[in-house]
Length: 220
Image (cartoon, rainbow, N blue to C red):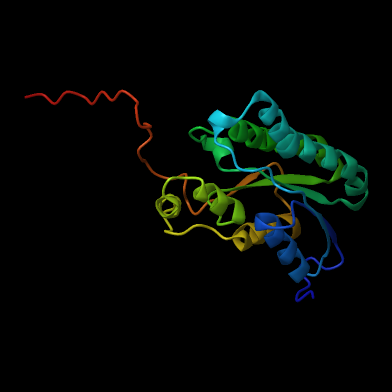
């Protein structure tokens, strides 16, 4: 039941809306008065990068990039008529990288790049195109990935401490950003909005275990 009018009378299509961030976005737009259509598919089982084949990389590329491109291409004729907008979901790691996650980082970085290029192309039709790059958001997928580690509790704590705010985000945090971009950010196009709790800020340990370390010599 809609509880607001912030996006009343609009139709919103959400892919991946069955759980996690996508489900949060569905709820937020419904609460804003929009009519929401969503679809989803079963997620592939989590894999560590060393287990990912070239075929697995292609499948991730199809899911994260080509699927996004195809749906956008099909929606553009209507979006141009209605002067609608597109919001892609990228990832913080697409901008800053992540250890042992080359396929995922590459596909999400491509989503951000595609967002900016499409924003340029579609501006002449009044169609805004933006993306959100979440950081550590507590979702079923995050929980599943943690369960694959030797110490899930330690992994979750490490993920929590990665944010200066001292907590992981919730799907509702990303959803609030999506509603803002759709309903109020009328002078924003081609932007990448970080919803990260500040995880990208500051210095930290970057050398992974096994990296030869050469500290400077302290003069005697």
